Length: 441
Image (cartoon, rainbow, N blue to C red; front, side, top):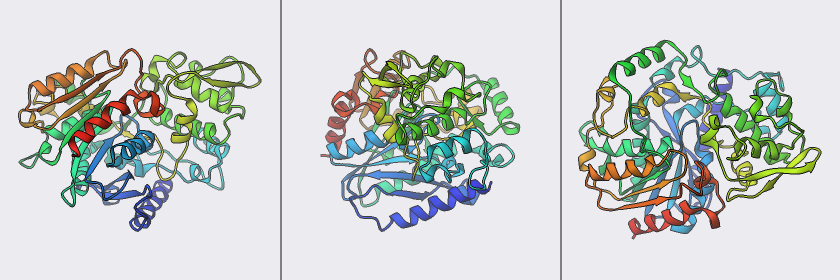
């Protein structure tokens, strides 16, 4: 718990300091949340890019177990090319993270502290769990959207336009915001456009009875969910966070991950590799397992020789770009170590964005689909089997969306290519900027 308090204090101080930051900077700001407790965690954070004098703000929400840092590269490019300001969101759970050793910039210390559970500089890492953060069991979609509304309201100050979007589950959040009933006010009335990046189109097969059973389990179980089976819910996030720091700071060094007993065998090559190569092996679509499909990229391949072997870039997303973006832990990293189980449950019940037995059982206020009257952009990769564009068409058909921009790159891009690919090869960046400009006229 001490680590969480230190992390929160650092974030709060950073937020206070950046209020006076130059307009050309990229400050990290704390914004008061929607009222859920505890009070010290009732806040979210945004990393901002572009001029605060811009007439339009694009608010981007990260996906499942992802943080604002995952959006850093594409947010910076959107701001520069479209002439808007972009805000990348960190949900409230990010304040639970202990970055004390990460922020030293010494990746081997980070590996020992976070993954080997060793004492470093007189400290041991203590992960958040049901004992230290039982309140997180209540952090579902309602809490997330109430928090997001405070961000949207801040973005709208001075009569600025707001385009709300997200990647993966972040797209689900954005579309849910549009149809949500905020004490009688429809969410879409706060918005001027919607962006769904490879998400938001998943159908819901969740029934009311199963929703209630899962909710009951959350109320007495672990507040958080993860990605790697049979490992703690924060495992994939910490592997990614520490691994990218190693790849960024010591790209040619021998990867310590191969001797790490908890790393699944399918993430360890059969021969010694560098830190950068280990990251590429774990993320590239040709070598990464299906279990980690939400992290897939087109990045290249392992070198055919060397001791340790390095990485050879060969796709639209050089792995060094990922290391540069995700390997920066301050003020924010690219992952959300503690993703609320209630938020994932609620997100699985919103398919169709209208009331259903499951959404009613969970108390989700999906009331205003028919009234949504803002433009919609949707980008499809090869990850969710075409559901994104089908979902976007269904959303528009049931609402008053005046126009759509639908982009299908399912044959050439993986789930995370749109947010990491180099600009000249990034079909998402090249097509979303004209959409944003059409609103920012």
